[in-house]
Length: 86
Image 1 (cartoon, rainbow, N blue to C red):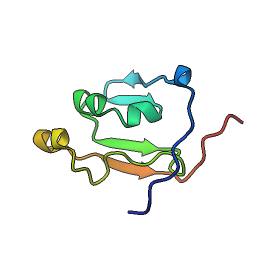
Image 2: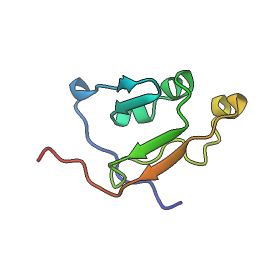
Image 3: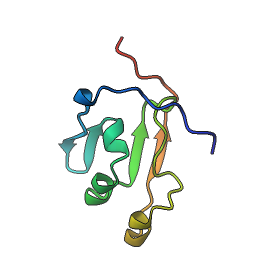
Image 4: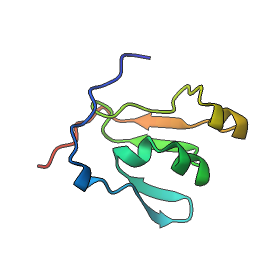
């Protein structure tokens, strides 16, 4: 795995977390992507990272005890795009 991309500089008022689209499908921001409790609670197994140049895959090849105890593996599809306001 390459070095971690530079994390976004975010105003904490902009944090949304995740929004449920339908059963098993969520759209979320960088905060939701690194929220271990959310990942486990919602049994997230796959993540599409659309800002791979700025947000690293937090649980890829994870050694998190909480994930291991649940037998969970999180797989990623990563697009090396940059998140911008334009």
